Length: 347
Image (cartoon, rainbow, N blue to C red; front, side, top):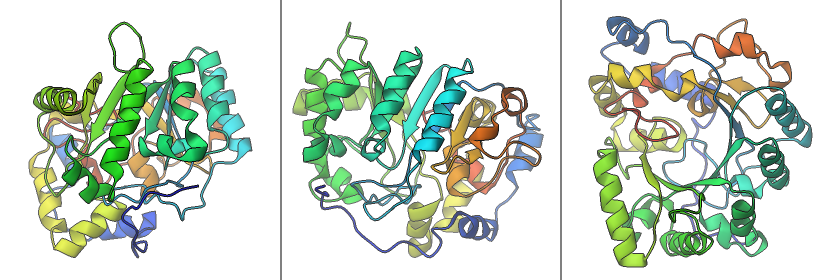
């Protein structure tokens, strides 16, 4: 498999989730997330059902990005087993969960990716592929775009910016050009074009220690510039806050900005965003089948509240659908400003 010339570096000493939890706990902040919720009359924070089963099939990726909260890369070997994949599909088929959200790493690299997509589509569920775009340019994965279109998979593709310099600075030399080529191919298949029903969303993270811009204004800019510069169209832009986890936490520590960034997130707490955070309607499944409230809690190895099922094989919709959410300082990242989720701004 050809690997793009990405930002290869040794993994951070804090790469383990428990170590990251301890590091975040050491950062002095004005108030805890629990106290912020209590002040807004939103405690306890609890799930209101399971609308999304988000399945992280592994940490293997063809890129190594500076902001990646998964710490994914070509050297990672964590991959979901066929048994756990089967269990996820059994849970999906035995429930009324409407959305299967497949993520990684680069989920397309997983040998069971096609099976997940085909089974999810056959069940009539909305299937989302969280794609880094460049994986579709690898010689052995040129089948991916047509396969996604054939199963009417919703593509949510990550792209740091609509210009090359910022994108390559975050993801590595050549990534922007490869991403543009991938987007053109998706457009040629009908993605992002009116009337096709093939949904193409883009996701952007800031290239530094600041909050993302207003999503609606940014979407207008991105649509104008990508079409003007490259003839590319898409449906929606999702702006996502960089979470103080894994490589971005390393970046903050290196720059001496960890305390300042956490303080910014705390100051920007928005009760309206807190009321709509994704963990209230999402259940996250790790590559080993462990259950978490969200992808971020998964990377921090922050388990579900005590007494709840801990593995997908023990799935219990009644208990998990109304569960109390496990909280930490990082939760301010999802509730700062307009909020942040896998579907972009919350408010």
